[in-house]
Length: 177
Image: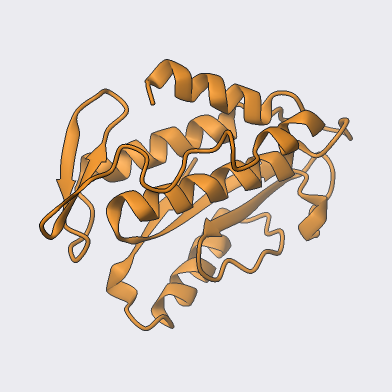
């Protein structure tokens, strides 16, 4: 997927409120395995700028792959409206769906367990209040959600969760701004 197409998808997913929630459906989301091919023990990870990096799923991700996941996930979050009051629909929910899909895609593309910590506005589904900033996290395993207003507390919670997993070294925690 080109950078322009990815940005268009991000804007489609988040920028239209209620419609964004339905636009996040499986037909429009990046699919597991898109652009990823196995090569021996390594997987090809396609960076946004077009380069392909071979990733060994048994080792920590290279910095440029982590940065690519962080930047493309941040684009999803940044495209959502920040609001001091109720808006039609729940843009926080649309962001949560889109970031969860990004985590699942990145996990498939790298062979690593991916957790993305991100900020949304509101998040009433998980105890947040309209007009307040809340920190959530996305992962294909775990990720019980409650709204937490403090970033450091959320990151500590995710690290504690990862530490309880069968293989904590298989996890990558990517924290957005």
